[in-house]
Each structure stands twice: as structure tokens, then as C-alpha cells.
Image 1: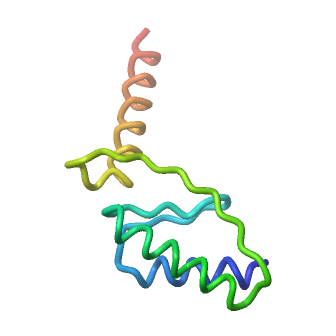
Image 2: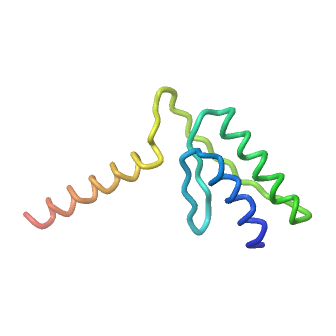
Length: 90
């Protein structure tokens, strides 16, 4: 299965869109049409090396917002730092 996943991730990385891959998911950030074009091409890449493709899609649509792939994580880390500082000063 790793060959099929590698084929899909290669399409995502070559797309130029902000993306991140972890042990369970590949996240892509961009405009609706460009993201779904990448999803289609990544699915086609999987089907080129496998007899089936399985997708789990989740969308977080926030018009006018960009940079959220990193922004959400940065806000989380900041909140954790604040909690740790409050706990250490108590």
C-alpha cells in the first residue's frame, strides 16, 4: 500500500500547494478548485498502481483565510505555552 500512498503524496507535493503529511493524513490548503484538482490527480495516481482507492475528505472552508495549515498549529502551541506558564507560576 505504501507505493500507492507515495504516488498520491508525490502529486500533492508537486502541486505547489501548502501541504503536510503525517502518519494518518495528508492535508492540503488552497482554493476549492485547485485542491480538488490535486485530489483527483492524486486519486488517479493511486489507481495507476492499485486496483482501488479509498478517500477520506474533510474540508475546513474559511473564506478570506490563508496560512491556516500553520496558523492553527501556531495558535495551539501558543495556548499550550500560556497554560504551562500559568501552571508554573501558581
